[in-house]
Amino acid sequence: MPRLLLTGANGFVGKILTGRLQGAGYEVVALGGNVSPAQSIADEYLTCDIRDASALAQAVADAQPTHVIHLAAISHVPTSFKEPLLTWQTNVIGSMNLLEAIRQHAPDAFTLFPSSSEVYGAAFKSGIAVEEDTLPQPLNPYAASKVAAEYAFREYFRQGLDGVIARPFNHIGAQQSPDFVTASFARQIALIEAGQQTPVLKVGNLEAIRDFLDVQDVCDAYIQLLGLAGKPGHPLCLNIASGQSRKIRDVLELMLKQSQTPIAVEQDPERLRPSDIPIAAGNNTLLKQTTGWQPAIALETTLSQLLDYWREQVKTTP
Ligand code: GDD
Image: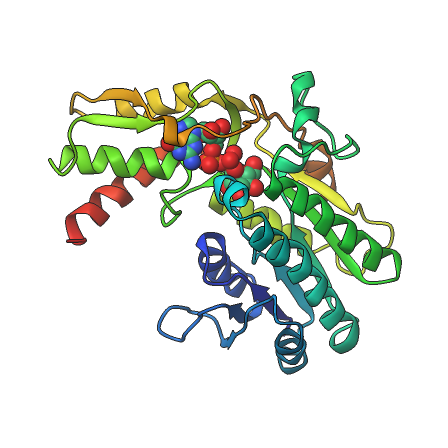
């Protein structure tokens, strides 16, 4: 049975991906800063901070994976502005620590590195859906750290490690932190409906345009990318995008339409960023042609499930 080491296993994507990987026939060794059997359905659990090189090397030696997915990262853009050093230490040095550990203890493992569409940054300004060979022009510490980590992976791939880099666009769903836009809006709508927040929904930049995917569709793409293991000459970097970009204002409208409660919208200066990518549009042809992947879940369905999730959370959380 293939044995997959999943870093960041206790995060939003990690928790969902664990079950999906098991369903696809992988034994999952979960690695997280604070993973415990009570929190995870993984087959095994390892606790380790990826900034600790020797602890991570020991974890990889213990896990003996045939596959690795490296999700662990600081992934919130505003946090990366506030904590650039933590972001670079986690996203870049953490990735280097993992690559060295793999080289020493699991050199035959296939490694998937989820980077981010954020790496394109200023290159999005062309308005054309970016392809993978577009030169990254990051606009925040998070994106810059992901570009640096991508180059670390590429160097190990050049030296013979088998693996692939994915550049997922915004992925959303139940259990995502309300630090991110759709979860923030859904949580506020649920709180307002329950009478726990005045009927004013706080927002940041509504003019930004993003490509949203259901987290389940992104997990599907990751699992299909694992199928590239051992295939000579496979692509090294692929976008994961729906191919349809939407204005945040329109996404908010879709969500407000699903509520009976009158809600006013107010811009909160705290939610504006030192720089924000105005438009993100991605070309997904390479992923579709390479793996046959297709996004299956409509944005309206994801948003409705997200609202229901937050309505339940608000009901059950004191
Ligand atoms: N978080 C947040 N909260 N964003 C808001 C809000 C708000 O109240 N109002 C408007 N926005 C705008 C942000 O300014 C941004 O333009 C957009 O909504 C999306 O913000 P986020 O959900 O925080 O995501 P992101 O685009 O910065 O980054 C996400 O997607 C990347 C992939 O494209 C993250 O998940 C990254 O980790 C991921 O790599």
